[in-house]
Length: 329
Image (cartoon, rainbow, N blue to C red; front, side, top):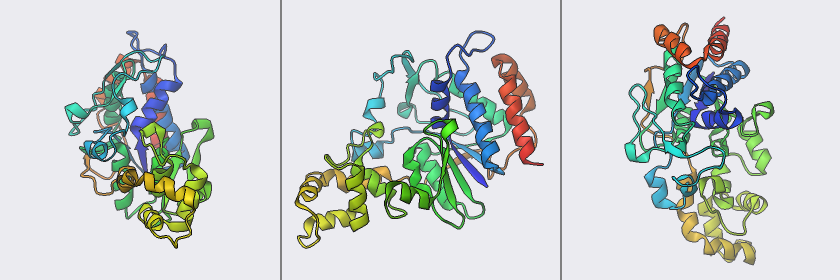
C-alpha cells in the first residue's frame, strides 16, 4: 500500500498539539519535529504501508487559484496571527531538489518556521521520500500521485476535508485516513463513506464543497446555502455546471429561493470548481527518486546521528525506525 502524507497538515497539527516547552538541548523548540515523527510512526503502524511519500506545499496559495477566487486563503496571509503562537515568519521548504518559489512561501508562527527544515532533514536522512510541485499545494501533489497510481492501494493521511475528493473505489482503491479530529478519533474514509457522510452521490464532493464554501480556505460558497441544501442540489442535479443549467431552466423544478441564491452567485460558481478540485496532472519532483518504497536502513546514517544529537530527538527517531523495520518483517 502507498501512503501519501499531507506533511504540512501533519506538522501544523503536531505544533499546535504539543507545548513549545518541548525543546532541544540548546533550548530551541522541537515540539513540531517530535510530534510529526510520532504522528508518522502512528499512521505507519495503523496503515501498514510498504511505500510512503511525504507531500509538500511548494506553493501554499497558488496564484492561479487566487486569480479565480481572490479571497482564497487571504486570511492566512501575514498579519493574521494566533495569539498563542507569536509572530509569523517565512517558511523554508528547500530540501533535495525541491525549492519553493520565494514569493509564494507560506508564513507560519515563528516557533514553527525554524523546525520545518529540521523535520525535512530528518525525514531525508531516514530515507522517507518527499515530493512537491511548483505552483501546487500538497493537495495537488497528493491528487496527482493518487490518480496516477496503478499498482498499489493508496491511503491519504490528512486533516483536510478537501482531500475527501480523491477517495475512489478503484482498482486500486484510494482511501483517506482523516486525522482532523485528533489522533484518538481517526476515521478511514472510502469513496462510499464520504458519499454517505454528506448524503451525496460518490464523486461529487468538489461540487458540494464549492456550494457550501469553506471559511478555512477563504471560499465564500453560496450565501444561504449550507450543507443540507448543497447536498440536495448535488443529489438532484449533479455537478456545478448542471446546477447552473437548472437555474436557467424554468422547468427544472428548482425552487425560487435556491434559484435566486444560485443566480446571484453565478460568477463565483463559474470558477469555484476549478479552485476546489485538486490537480491530477502536477509536475512532481520526488527526493530521492523512486516510488516511495520504505528504506531498509537510514539513507544518511551519519547525518541522522548528527541531527539526533543536535536536536535531542533520539526517542521519536528510534521509534519511527523501529516501526519502519517492523513493516518489513
